[in-house]
Image (cartoon, rainbow, N blue to C red; front, side):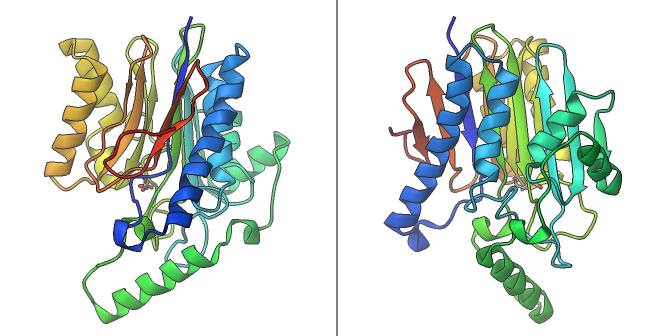
Length: 311
Ligand code: ASP
């Protein structure tokens, strides 16, 4: 039986005009590290759930992506991290909202999945993670100069009531993974710092099942990235699964249609998706989306803008 893993590092990419060859290479390297981390699990006969967990942990640890270390700041200059993970074999799911402390928000979500809960937030979620024995780090661990500066620029822009001319990459981003394992099971995981200068308490789509994260062996596994409010209002991930289930659409047709329609009404972003047969779809309606795919052959393929995946 074959297996496949697809990942994203956010649909808010740096403008081509400001991207340097060094930075571009660093993004590809980060994506490939995450692909290889997930591939190691799948090649060893491991589960899709473990593979998406390990791939997302690798992206959280990478300062370039908006999750874990390197996450964006709220308007109050704090980190509030959201993450969600779902097992397509039994529709078990776990998510954390607005947490700060556990080094890996996706491992926190995974611990919730393994408990009797589905969704835990704030202080209660952090206490739960402590009791579950997860690794904690000081708040400074999540800091990067780039994200702090992006917050200062955005707060200044708001003071001046100036037009928003920021790069997408300075506004948001997210990391995520979907996989189909050699047993035919699907899983999805998504982790984010949210949107730069988001209101304290604001929750994005990654921990909202059916919006930014969804997995069901009967249809597909999806991890989304983009302007979360749109993904929540339009139940984007579940909409794709429903089109497959009730209209008999293929993964590609359903996912491309939903993402294109969302773009028309103003919901910028994209997603990675895999179905029970191992087909992969990576649609986005933004200028780019950090993304990658790896299959049985172990070739890590990645792309940033509207180009083909390259090894
Ligand atoms: N979807 C994330 C959120 O709304 C942000 C992103 O993916 O860019 O929190």
